[in-house]
Length: 277
Image 1 (tube, helix red, strand yellow):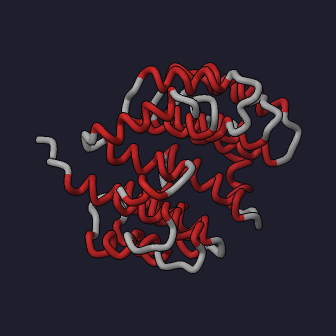
Image 2: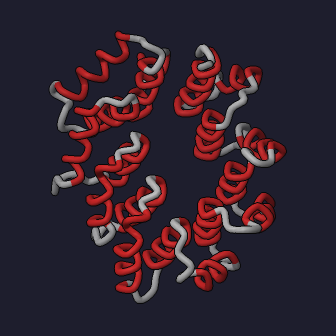
């Protein structure tokens, strides 16, 4: 509640969304006010709609989908991620169209979104756009998405990506293997727990923790990293991977980053929710 009251930008709306998910009417009204008032067309309005969409608000989800078609919407990747979090399969057609967006971040978010929504009906479109790319990072992003959705046509490309000197390329391949869960995927990902890149180590740990709880130690250690961005990433992962260590979460509530505090508070709120029979 302290972050919701004092922070600005997306983190404020993330905090309000977590409070609203517990039934807090005041927080829900604050989100609805931001999404429909003077801030509605600003990034604050988009952030409020993103929080509402995650709560299952169909009107907020519709407004986000409309923003994907707006020429003045600069951060379409943020909108895509919110629609994916809301499990909005109706946006799959829009995501396919955005695979040809001139902004690389938008294209990458659209490809990841199709994977997250398990949009196997989009495989043919993905392959078409992939074939249009002669080389470069866009082609690698699309290859990873194809592999993640079950295509065998890019196996050789993904194998080369796993051995790439670039950590972001290795990470794409690791995520594709995990999502596809082909035979041997766990053993293929395990070496990345000691990768030189902290981002790759964390993502590998996040993917492996559900099947190997010992991998959680890498995420927990990153919660004390000197980089706020690394701590933010680790805290987000902690929130999404129960069971929760309440002592760790209470410690994170004192972090200087409002994002870390929000993720820690979100996990504590989840832990306090009555278990569904």
